[in-house]
Length: 392
Image (cartoon, rainbow, N blue to C red):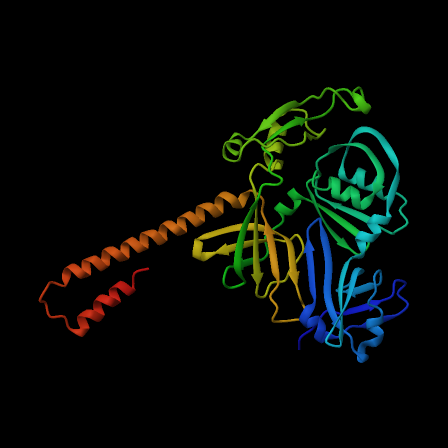
């Protein structure tokens, strides 16, 4: 028996809750998630007397309850066509509304160095929306000028990537994971092309490509510069990835600052691991029977290319109400995929070219053996064709 997720809709104060028609959800429902960006659901419901009370709740700022999470209706459009009314709904995860309502009006003046937990706890201090935060892994420390006087949601948009972190939300709780922690997790699931996944698409993105940055370690003097920022550091140098510059052109980035470092060698290694010196490679595919877990790391194997890599799940679209609707999942393993995939593709093309050349040579030999005037039996012809057919 197929088990569908439970989905209901309620008014903003949760005083009335109703079910929506399964048939409409099977046709139109879509859950979309992108790491550190969005988590929303969309669907369309056709007006009917049987679900009149539920349809009356299809209004902006009302709540969709689905999969143990709550989503706030941000958009609701009613279209009347051929005597039928259709309601198209877009609802964003409740966390985003709460994060907008959490505002830190105080300001820590000056350019100061923060760990992720320090900055987040300051932004969430004494919030009245019930938001809590957890931190898993070790995060770099960064400099922030005049922290505060903004919403928590704005803070996430501005700084989460600088802390090299990913987060997962669970209603009113947010959990941050360091990139190093996610990479170190054991790979449990393995996906095979044409068995678990299909229609793999590779895209490259240079939006965040950086191959030269100024590296600043532990400050020597605290607060002697403009706005209270330090002016001297135990480590102060420029990191440059010459291979990346040669291939993609010079792409300077913001200074990389972390007071944990007091020697250049260790910070150089940190910069090498942190700076995105290659285009981000994103793999998008449809999945057959895959349990989707946010930020999970899996091994993707493509036997036809004799290629495999470790990838992190950073987005998906799915309709769990329709067993015949295949989810689309997006993986991202940053720069590691670029050269590996190019090599695999080149190898595949080269092998294909070699096989074509081999087939032509074999065919030419077969023709040379068929001298003018020779009598060729049907068995001879079949044998020659069979030999050629075995070439791959």
